[in-house]
Image (cartoon, rainbow, N blue to C red; front, side):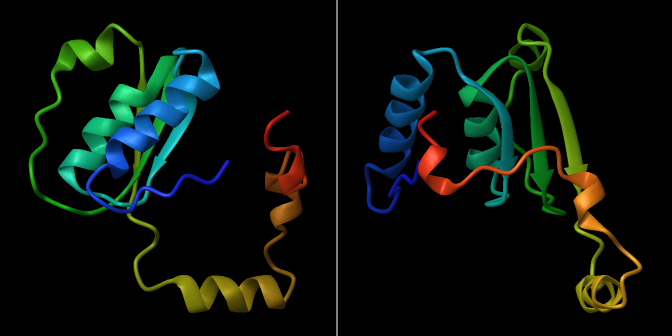
Length: 116
């Protein structure tokens, strides 16, 4: 599913699309790549119970998330700083065969199967 969230109604469009797609159940994994206080707050709001939220940020601006929103859904929140300045080294290791991403992958789906 691709959702165009540009424009002033972007967040509302995303919220509605997730609500429609999940039957108002929320999604089990959110990866916040925007890394702004509002996107972290939205990530929490869009999850289902027992979901995981991955935050790819080293931002230091506070958000207004209430602890109860995390606790009542029993969320797991994980942060990653993306191994700062290590991307070229990782690519070299993959090209040299020192890293095998196949071992990290469980399933592969063609994009046309997204609705399934």
